[in-house]
Image (cartoon, rainbow, N blue to C red; front, top):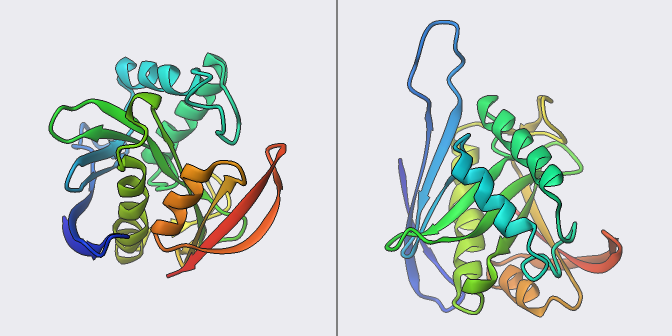
Length: 218
C-alpha cells in the first residue's frame, strides 16, 4: 500500500491510499487476478468483481438516460453493459489496469459512480473517464474521483511497473501521459477535468458531439 498526500483544486491537502494486490491462490493452475483498492477522505474505490450485484449496479448506472445524458456512448443496453463488464473482468484477470473501477462513499457504502483508466491511442498513454450517479451530482465527488486517479493511481501504476497498451492483451509501455475529454456543453465535467490539473490542447468531434481534450504528462 502506498500513502499519498496531494493538494486539491482548493489548495487543501488530501490524503489517499492505493494498493494493488493479487487474488488469493486457489491452486497451481489458477492465475491470480489483479485487484486494486483506493481510499480518499470520502471515497472507497475498487475494481469491479464477478459478483452479480456489481453487474446490476452498472446496469442501474449506465442504462439510466439521465446518468448518461452527456456520457460518451449515451444510454446503454444491458447487452452493451455486459460486454464492458466482461472485458473489465478479463482485464483485471490479466493484470490490465485499464479496466473498470467502482466508487463508493467510504462511510455509507453508497455507490457513487464509475471511474477508469482507458487504453490510449498510443502505448504508454491512458485516458481517464468518470460517470457519476445522478443522485450524487453537485457534491464534489467527481473532482475527488478524478484527482485521486491523476495524482495517486497514475503514480502507483508507474511505480508498480504496469504497462499501458492500446488495447486488451497487448504488451504496452510505461505510463507517461494521461488525457480526458468532455462535451463542450458538459460544464461540470469540463470543470472537474481542469481542477484535476489537466490542460486543454485540442477539440474535435467524438461520439457524435464536439468535445474538448485535456492532457497531463507525468
